[in-house]
Image (cartoon, rainbow, N blue to C red; front, side, top):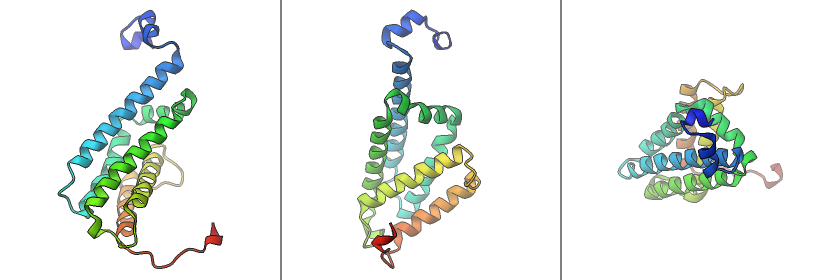
Length: 172
């Protein structure tokens, strides 16, 4: 690994005491890079309509993940094994916070009974799950282009249509 990085093993272990620490640093680096790209994209949205925001959120989720799909799969798999599971959860909270901020800017276009914080958490979960399903060629997934279009439809309906019934608490 050190050879591929163009440094000696001694130099590498001067900064990282073991492979686990090195892997954790890689997970942290890619997580920080993702949040930076996501925050920049969100910052570029304020004047957009809610429909444009939905399109861009879904496009970001699907466009960002396939850049290095094999690396992304590896990072997801090793994060908990190198003590970075909490770091991944923190990234999800950051993403949800950024989504919440943009939803609050479009509060008037949201269904009246929808809380922007709840909606942001739901959107983060839906987008992460759908993007990862597309990335891993999950057997229950549909083609990535169609999956993105269906996510846009799902999210738009969720954000703009008021709840028409309350599910029974006993169902869950």
